[in-house]
Image (cartoon, rainbow, N blue to C red):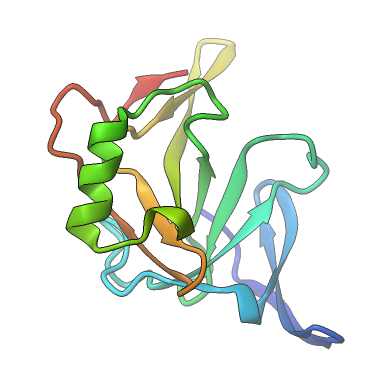
Length: 156
């Protein structure tokens, strides 16, 4: 689990929150926080998040989804297309329609889980329940796709 909030500071662009994660220190701008009104599956109390690059890994396609109101919670996420993972257009369109989100403003992310097996590590992606983020409204939700072909542990 993650450590609690490290500090709060005021910057020229507004308030910033700094967290110490297992990947290093991340800073989130308060004006860019994302609201998850219903939380994330299994984390219903986690309703406010910030997205951040992984510290010291600017070229990585992986991001951190840091919970603000439960600072010990942090998810590793990524755009599935950047990882070469395919969510069919029809399934994405259905998710957008069911969630009433605008396609032009919505980003799809998948939650990643890191596993250790013997002396190596591997990642899995939850393709069954992607995160949809409306970048204009700064709201998000986790949507369970009705297509049962997707798994919650797609090995990358």
